Image (tube, rainbow over all chains, first blue to last red; front, top):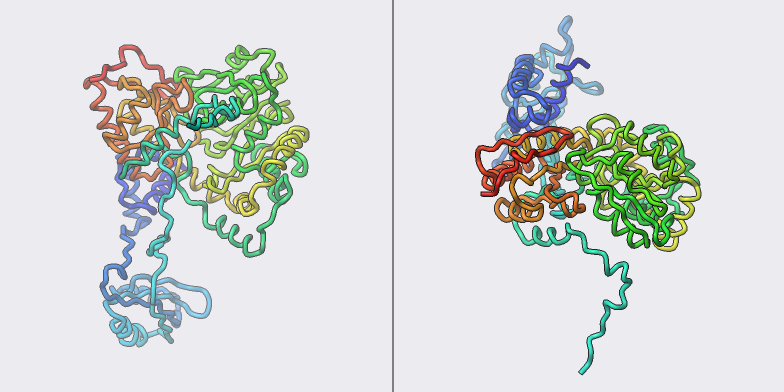
Amino acid sequence: MSKNRCKRKEILEIIENDARLNLKQIAAMLEMEEDEVARIIKEMEEEKIIAGYFTVINWDKVGEEKGSAIIEVKITPQRDLGFDAVAMRICRFPEVKTVRLMSGAYDLVVYIEGQTMREVAAFVTQKLAPMEHVLNTATHFVLKTYKLQGTLVEEDGEEDRRLMITP
Amino acid sequence: MTNTPDWKSKINPLVLGIQPSGIRRFFDLVAEMKGVISLGVGEPDFVTPWHIREACMYSLEKGYTMYTSNQGLLELREAIARNLAVAYGVSYNPRQEILITVGVSEGLDLAFRAILCPGDEVLIPEPSYVSYAPVTVMAGAKPVFLKTSAENGFQINAAMVEKAITPKTKALILCNPNNPTGATLDRKHLLEIAEVVRAHDLIFISDEIYGRLTYVGEHTCVSSLPGLRDRTILLNGFSKSYAMTGWRVGYAAGNQDFILAMTKIHQYTMLCAPVTAQAAALEALRNGESGMKKMVDQYNRRRHLVIQALQEIGLPCGEPRGAFYAFPDIRSTGLSSEDFAQQLLQEEKVAVVPGNAFGEQGEGFVRCSYSASINDLTEAFKRMNSFVGRKVRKGKVLTFSPGKNEIKKEDICQTM
């Protein structure tokens, strides 16, 4: 692996777990100059390797009513375009948070978030299901989230239990 | 009127003569304070990986709740033998040459009790792990310290070993990488030391618990050195590399006679290591390599962060090359190790371990563990920077030179 590629990978591993670390911290951890870290991060942002920075939020704890669902979507692939054109069309709806092409019994898995379950249901019936090339959909409403983006959203009971001083 | 019985007079004088660990006193002090960021912890900040915990639970479901053989589960001993062969090219017969112990601590005790006779001398580098000298004394032998210093990178060398040898010298113990200094000994130096050990017919007790946590160069297993396998008792375990400190499981590997002798003591005093911990250790060896490497990568990144933080503070510190400790020189503050640690705790709520807890040669230094989160490390060193700034007269710049911690007299600042 080239040196630059290796640095890129290391930076990604660090910010994947904590995007709040500043350039100085990242540079120190990787024995690099801050300018170099900044340059590599900018490159990766421009190349869409770093596609965005998000916060993992457990909305259930905020007390706001939210509705979300995972929808299996079966579609007809199009000549020369395959599944991409329909997938991109679905992606453009702001309610749609994630779209993935799947192997198996259905083609796309779509994750939708709305203000209410009713809003989510309306989106499926009015926008997604009637869309051209969409053959059928199966909607699974999310009842509870336990783990999100590799993070346990509930209390995991794994706080630091070590003694303050040990040999 | 009744006389209070003098119970102390009934205690073994050997035990009476042993001082409680210096860490203990400091622990009591820290325990009374709230909101402390601790850099004083000698164990990983990771919880044991889930697959290892899950394997342990499965073993309980399957009814693994009984004694194992004194030597430990054969499957585990076989996995350890394979691991040592692959990692270091050293071969042990799992049936006769490996003993599962309750951590390296028990392995050390067994090794010393098995080989030491009253009056024997054991060469112990200083500073070193807190139990080496007391365990030597409790085995009836005498610790002889090999005094390392910042000037020689806290490393022992062949000449130092040679000079300390007397007709009574029986063994040399070495923790590589070292707790508390983070220093490592490379193959070249180990070969030179091995030559002396062979020439004087000594036994090499090699504590390699931090072996996998080597960040610069490669760890050399002492048993893999020419002619050293049979005169080495290799002690290792799962605590540090697999984040399994509380499981208390380790192992000793050595020639059949040494292991048989150690097993005799083990069978009458411990019987066997806990079977659940052994099941977990087996899972760690079978499937824990990638998880362990990720933890090692994280320690290494924190290590860089700590080196830079100490540079910014102006505390000289030899490059820590292994384990998860930095051992900065705090003499520029004019404080003793204990005063530094105590005042840092009281004024900034940051806990470090005074270097003298690891022997006289640790005076003037403190042990900072980087087994802590990035945020805690960043905040702790920020506070330490303020603290040192207050203690050291402004305008003096201390130099940092990895591996060479020599402080020039003109660099020593006066306390304000």
